[in-house]
Length: 301
Image (cartoon, rainbow, N blue to C red):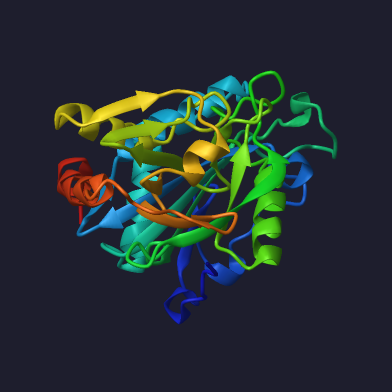
């Protein structure tokens, strides 16, 4: 599914390194570590009705990822919140907004890989755009299985929410060429990991299943869906899952901040057919909506 340019974003204000700048002036140095080596971490957040959903959870993960990459000056949660609030206020954004938070290792004194030449401190970027959910959760999506494998801890741990997304991008290119919405990625053992941009679940005979998060991000929406299942007496199981199990599932859906709970209707040309007579996905989608006000931090303006 192709995201579209929104003319409302033509004159947005972006926070870059402590300054609020017009879109056409919002830039980082060619010596910034994100340019030099993709050396940065990021989070995607969503604004609903005057509040940022799961803000603290996202900032905890941002800080944890930066710590795992040995950033030396990680900004406090309060300072990141303040920058985010200021950016939203400058743009008059209180709803239907996607925020891309990026923390780079900062500017280098000379080009190169060595973090010791990053002497100017980290750089925070707050990019807020008017943007709907990335997928249409009424019509759902079609996917293919990519030949690209999702990272696992013996190579580059997917629990670090880093900017090195090339394997996901290559998977998405394969989906584009195939004329579908997204790519399903397997782990190094051949089990299902996730889609190129969101986590995956399936249902079968009244049970919800999701792959182990060994080769994918521990998604915040994923965690909330697991909590919803446990709180509402819905059987939930995390385990290794094969493609065949997904082909023959009653329902398949993806989860993520950018799309909430998104139905997957087709995998590799196989239609997902619900033979159970009951939709656990519909039930979870309704219950998820009740969590949005509960877990949203109200904007201070």
